[in-house]
Image (cartoon, rainbow, N blue to C red; front, side, top):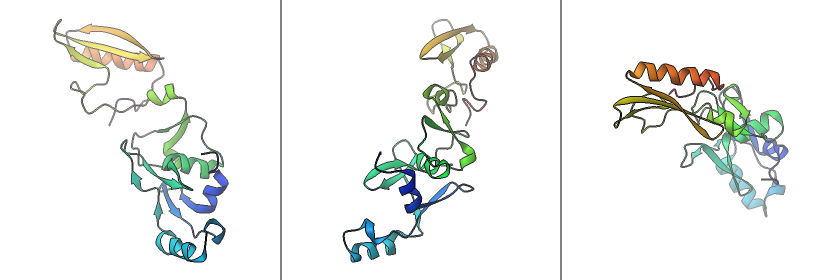
Length: 179
């Protein structure tokens, strides 16, 4: 990735910060081995949307100079002029929403504090599950890689309240567990 600088990205791509979309620019002849390859590439790709394929994690991505890059990181690099130092968090949880207002550079820990609820969650509340042995609702939270038991409750509402209070206490994002 060191070879793909923000300057090269700006030469190759246009980023619309309002829509979050990237588009290929006409590419200079210096990037190709011959005129025919240059003309062919520009005819096929110039002014068309870039970084539009989705990977297995549902992030938009593409290739620049043979290097696979995620669209949200490219958007950040073009907009700010440097690669992000940390993880890029999609504030609204939509991995395809690359509007600059929806992106923030955060630590891995902060990124985990804005996770969406997993599809296999059966309670509908992040960090809350039913313990079949005790026949109670159990609440827990993970902070700095350590799981903290918040208690077992007769009522799911109590477990949810305990979990939400812990999220506030440990600085989780307001969108955490939503979507």
